[in-house]
Length: 144
Image (cartoon, rainbow, N blue to C red; front, side):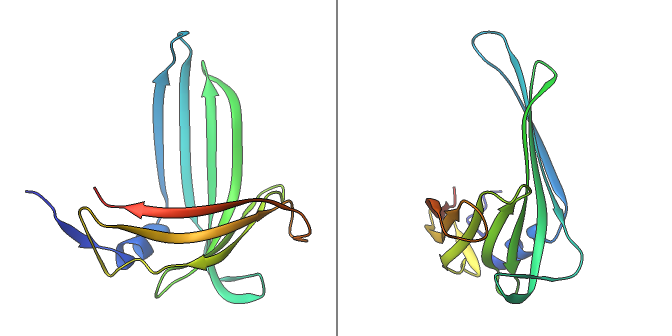
């Protein structure tokens, strides 16, 4: 069966409200074994982000091991509204960087193979004071 279209926004909302994880393994040309673990845990209830009440959130953790030993890790929280899904920002556990979505574009109700578009734009600040901008990011999607 070849799938040519699928739910867009509704599927994304279901996905972000469920806990999920993935593990990837690789070996580099020097023979080092790498393991990347990525997990997202949906937080219960709602919170406030940037003065916006009723935001939902996830706690996202990524860990990288080299030859079985911890190499790097990061934990952050992502904030968003539902119905429709609207990303708001994300904050690293240590408070830096602090990212705020400056514009977002709704995911279509139905996405089709070959479809693509803008998803959101973020500005990364050094911390929540937002006095020092570190970077900007433009996020897009494509359906293959």
